Picture 1 (spheres, rainbow, N blue to C red):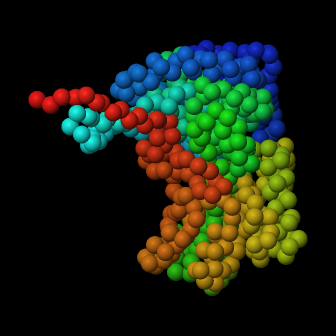
Picture 2: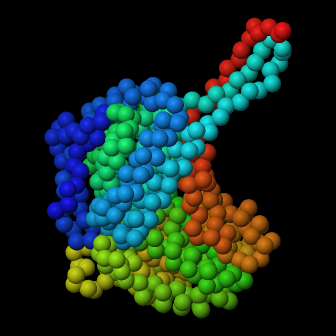
Picture 3: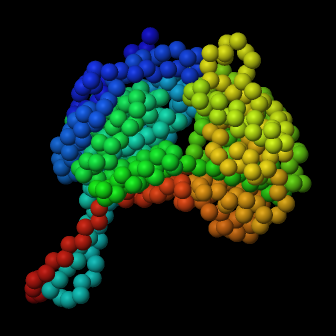
Length: 486
């Protein structure tokens, strides 16, 4: 049995929860219990915030070069251990091992990038209104921060928030998803080994977010909250955060359109679609949910997509040839089934997939076949709600104006993709799509140096690039008066 971490990480030490309660972490591939984890509650969260507050001033005043050194050391330790860390992630999440390694490397890229960016948090000298004054602007750490992270990217979602916070000089308390807490605890381990001072990073898993969220939101010492999750929960956090005027960074739901015009490089568009649709078995906020294909090329495009998806290997994530792992839990499979059933009832056709795999070896896991639907209309569930699974619904369209209007007809505005060879159309459609991140002939839109985030009901704030650090920093204007001139 793997030696999994099981305790809360508070003030530099591994601790049981105050209540002594634990909760199970389950392997979604076979339903087996991996381990039981200490179940944090409100009192544990208060202890973590106490530790973060105690460490805050010293960390904020630690020279940026020293903060950078510790962060880069943590990256070095993690990269040397990446295969074991990936196996841990695959065990608790189910994603293929190659995707786990990719996620870890990408997440560590954020730590590495912010380690350097933290050395460039420059201020400014502003021309004053008179000869006896000087105006100086400096950037300072906002204070104690909290990250509430989802299960779909157990390491990445923590690392990109943590990198920005640490580089800015903020201590951080992490509340990871209950479905995938072990990867979060591993992050605590390699940062502690790198010499991160006690209290700068705390990790408090809890079986129910409601046990700790009210404590976080009511505590005025928590100055920044970064949350990735559903729009519904994000709205609640906005309301609760108003009482203490918390700074919020919210990366919420998405419902990404993927548009293929008839002048696109179809081979390239197909490859990009498969990548963005099937990453994490479709369980990503930027997954291609509504696939719009211009009518003249739709039959051929659909045929080729179905051939590719039906050939993908379904299986346990720890097998090197697996391309499609299990969904995270039974409810996730049931939601996918409901979306497909609704589409079929409304007149859609299943081209491939549309069911759980029949292999006996997969019967205990939460698997669902990659699925392609045609004859899909805008009033079906797949058009209105984020499926979060390996379902590719094909919507046909005729004109550019029509598809842009349909793509924008959503309360969400996180990511959008479109493919065309027309340079003028690239400009027009990029500017017309109401999304925070747009991929023009590109399905691989994430980059550590770029500002990732949404508009409309997909959230506020940005992660990545210098924009990501700004979420954790205050701007202070200092007016110096009474100066004399020589």
